[in-house]
Image 1 (tube, helix red, strand yellow):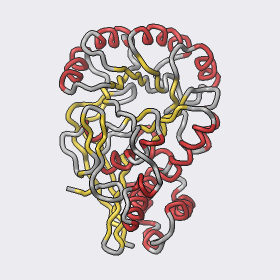
Image 2: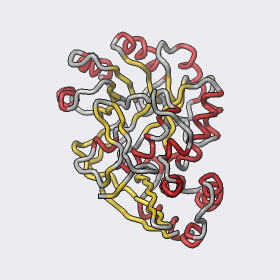
Image 3: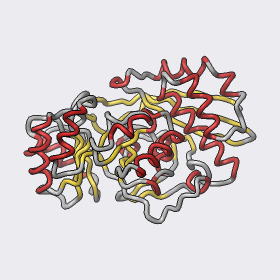
Length: 336
């Protein structure tokens, strides 16, 4: 098996702002695994919040290149366990590798990844489309630019209720709110009351990740469901979120790929938590991998490639929130 590593700077259509940062380009690492005439692709983006860069991921993968290339033919679960031993300090690199291996493995089996997992796709949820923090006029113009059935709105400002009130005047779409750790306990409980009246479906990670007492208080008193994001990073975090959140948003790059994400989804279901998978601002390589988890999810946020000025790959397509799979096997990805 051959390992090929590529680095890209993904240009965004618009400056993307959340409560922590603003970006115009997203550095991204693409892993390709080649074997027996097949190629599998995986992706992980850089992320300052998690101290992850493309050069570090590249270095970490190159350190174990021979181990990776000698591991052809193992099941994805065996492969992930072996790679986790070497990459436990770099879950982003592990994600790109695991994603590529799952893709390659399914292609060798002659199946789409969801078929290999025995998932059925009849009841797949629609994806939301994210509106980053900007002036109200710009946020309205972004919504008008792409009419959508569900919007995920980034908040964490001093005018959050005013923003949503104004946006509501321009669409009947479902709203989801992501404050990216920007609120406090009383603020979250108070905002939930106003936001429910404005047609908001749930709040995602309103408070700092480690504020577990605060999360418990909000869980008891919020009139809207609360979904964990920054508080649910790896497999061990799912159980912690029980009785502190109503659901979990699993990010593949944070947990180390598709293989652990599938286990996290199952554990969340057993605990009665709603299941969601979210994306970073990534290309169709990462987005197409997420698509194969859809049958197991209540909600999904996989609009990353829609935010790009130019995609580097073809894979799943998304129209008005509905995902259509590629005709190709595996995740269905081809680099342009």
